[in-house]
Image (tube, rainbow, N blue to C red; front, side):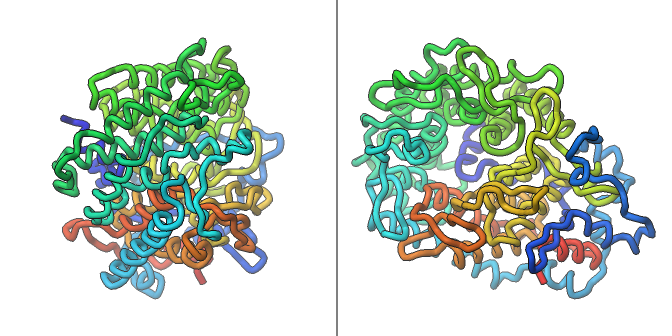
Length: 576
């Protein structure tokens, strides 16, 4: 069946798409963020770098200077437009064969370093995983500083930061199952599956967020079931005698317990939370975020196909269509918070981060998975609206006057900037651009987030691009930048991204490692910590760090890098 080879995409999510390889022969972030001692953040250094080369004055209006009053010049730089204007100078023009110290630094990533990075990623994973199993299982998470387990906050039901995620169902183990197999540990994968079968039940008085239970628990169970039963995936035959679809039965049971969220809503958009025993709580709010309601189709759709019951895909797809029907007629954008009964937008901010991010991601990945043209049509329209209304800066990543591109938070109806911060969840978007074939823009945007990482050794939850400082200072070990780095390496095969991966890995080892695992950074500047290791650190962050250098021999090649271009990277990330 068509979906079988892609379902492993819950493990790897179709990370190497052949459709992007043809335009993926280079590295071209033309972002010029420098980092000096006082942590300044300049968006104008790139043109200075190339002024001598072009013989032009880099002066010109910029979005950072125009945030008050004047109307912004909108662009729609898409893959098709890049193709049409191929005679223009692009990032590819910088690969012209010159060799100097910059080239030597980034043109290769030796096999010895690949082996070291692979081993470091495995050691990082097992340090967290082994301590979770020793000190925390069967609870949901590990407190890595105190070496204790963490479950729902039963004394404070309003603590949704904890209770939305933790449902007293061994979250970290279920979320991490497939990573064990990616790392090649069949024995531990099988042992962990048996532990889940023997110990996990969803008949719990736990009120959880539908979105979190779906992506972490339902997704973990379904992907592991497929890995056990379909030997055509990349990991071969890993099933064991006596397995009788128990993980699929658990997934079905959980999904049935989530279904009440879709009942009694006037729009078909689900309630944000359910109690696993009793359904929607009587005091449940009628507001939900776009990402939470519109990011269920991948898991619900696969489940429907596995068990032959269309109910789950139907309700998830109905929610997506309902949200889509509420977009602005003027801009085509959606807001970030909606009333599920009235269909009115409570939050009118439209952006790529929290509350919106995975809605776009699931549109494209649902199309990749199921082949439904409706999904891709919605994604294409959404992507065009994003380019037209959120993208600020010059049209081309690598040339022209003004600032390099940036995606900002805007009003869904007017397209005007609502604030001057971006959040760390937005770092997923370069990876999505890769999957959509827009590698040029992906390279440029990825460079922006990596520049911030280089500055702090982490991504602050919110960064104010006007004030050049974090707005929200914590970093919970999120995987989005690592995933985009992996996807860009798969698309370009450029060793620069292996250097990025190694840098991220070493930063985590230096700044987040504690007695029994890796801890959330409470403050990205002073590196103080919180006693929490979220499940996605093991299931995603470590996984993508390990996968970064997993590439077949025949796919390897190197490109000589022009020194001026490498100096651009030098300025961008402050490597010296």
